[in-house]
Amino acid sequence: MFISSKGKAPASINDVEAFIKEQLAVEIQRLSAINAQLISDKIETERVKANLKADKMQLFGKKNSLIVKKEELQTEITILNTIGSFNTSVCSYQDPLIN
Image (cartoon, rainbow, N blue to C red; front, side):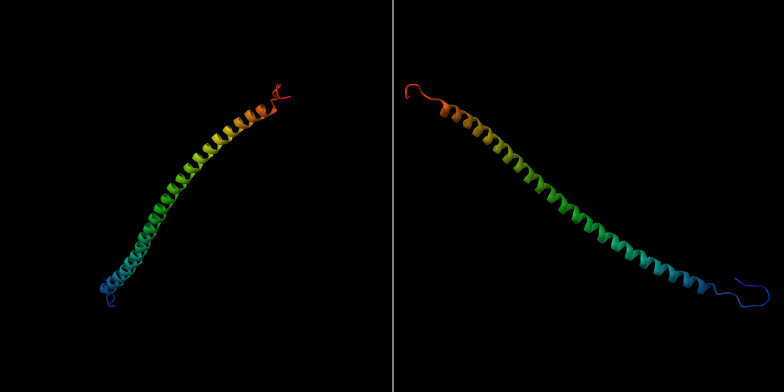
């Protein structure tokens, strides 16, 4: 490629090609580093997701056991209230034969 037709030296195409190849190599290295970071981030995200899923399952297990305990306590309270009202009526009853 000639700059002009007045006898000036031709521009070196090889130098331009070498510069472009060097720029491409730098860009490839930059993109490779970004790709490696993205892969690392993805692995970390998957690890966190797995931990969250395990924690969620553990919390559901605890929740279910607390629901069972709550139901047992409600049953026990109902029984105690029933027995308490029965005992109150028995205690308040006065046998006419004793007095």
